[in-house]
Length: 393
Image 1 (tube, rainbow, N blue to C red):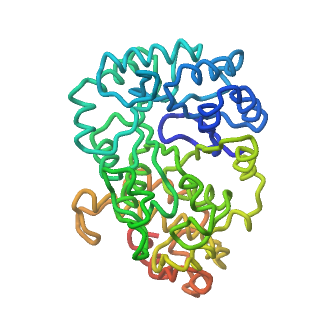
Image 2: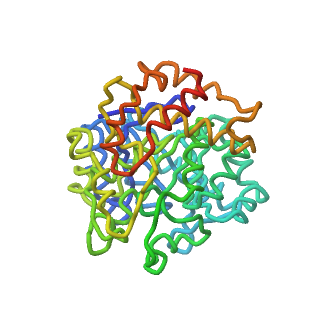
């Protein structure tokens, strides 16, 4: 199993995490899934459901091994009238959180995820109704260790992260959703009509969100990496072609700030497929050629950090240099600073990450071999010149 830092939380999390779809639908599966996870080295799981039976089953599966798992559990996911609901009523939220701790058999949650916020008015309600203050209080008490937010809307996520407190973002990431502009209606993400005209390149708001998270040290945990299974099926995929589960995971993990992908497995076979990512070959993980061949999508000129341009004769990690370049530019643009301005600056984090690279943009031979391999026609040589100007070497 591969592990990554979850932003600035200090947590080392497995790149494959466990969603809870399987034991929401059949809570008798919980023990089997946790046994599989422990054996494979999966140490992170998400529990959005407020279903008492599911929470109890997870608590029983955790018994005797609580410290082997990092829990991401949702604040304001409640059980009411025999069904799951999202609530912004503080008393309901408090009652649900206490129930969660009791049923899970623990006195703390690692990541307390404020649940499902896709509208700016809803984020304001979270503030006005005391939900955010409650999360802060729980953190001060040590009952949650980190504050998170789950969202499908980049506009809302950017606002929440910019305003502080959010340390972990759970966000829907796959190549199809990444081309759509932010929306307050989550149903737009899988509505057929929004895909009818075809797409070109990533939505800039989503790009900004990932770069902002990287810049601020907010770790991303991924949901909906398979778009509910649609992008695994050529007939259902809006791109007109299918990817494998391994390629979907590889794509999500290549986005800035992403630490782990929560596998929405509904059975043991699907979970095993996701776990298999760690043993997959580079060829199995590669998604660039598949993207370049999509009949309804163009990624022309957009770096996907896919490393298809490697190896470099000068041994430059082109994808890393490009990522740090984009992060620096995005940081300045978010503050209204244009490239070339006297006040344009390189943030400390990007400067230090760039410094430790074995080779830098200034080592570029300008041979152009990388550009002959790039499926997306990225002007790599020009990017290397820009990076050398910005970083100074």
